[in-house]
Structures are given as structure tokens and as C-alpha cells.
Image (spheres, rainbow, N blue to C red):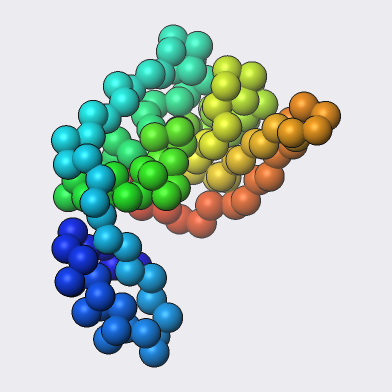
Length: 131
């Protein structure tokens, strides 16, 4: 994907990238968006949760804001091997999206029955956990 901050640039990229089917987004949002403060409670910290996904990389504000709005990075948490072993406990604390060195967990709540279901996908050699 490409992110532009000018409608003319967006139109130009859309025209030239059309054969490649590459998405182009024009960022027009609040250029002084206030990031939500990190809320990792003591109980989350005890499970090995260290941060949110939006806090572990640097990017221009337009790029970061688009990623947050499109992929909810500010609701995605990063945990440790301990968190991986106790992922269900993380969900009990309200975590609905969790990355660990081994897996990516996503929980959803049924709008009909209110029950919680989870999907787990393996994470392969992410640089996110290299340090």
C-alpha cells in the first residue's frame, strides 16, 4: 500500500499503479492525533505483556495513524514466552489481540451468544522478538 497526504498525489499513484492492483490511501486525518497512553496493568505485566504494537516501531505520523486506524495496532499487545503459555489469562484481562514469540492470538466475541472464540497462528522468526 501507499499512503499520500495530497489528493493529487493519490490520483496520480492510483492511475499509474492500477495495473498492479496496489492500494493507495490518502491520509486526511488529524495531524496531531493524540496517541493513547500505554496501559499495561500490573496483572498484564505479570503475564509478560510488555507493550502495544503501535509503540514498537517508528514511522511518520501519517503512516502510523493509518496503520492504527486500519489495523487497530493500539489494541494489539506484545507478550513473552510466559504470555504464550498463559494466553487465556491475557484474554481474561481484556486483551483481544496478542503477539508472542511463538503465536499470534486473536479473540472475538459472538454478537449473538456472547461467547468468546480464539484463533491462533504461528509466528515465524519475527524480528519484533529478536531483541
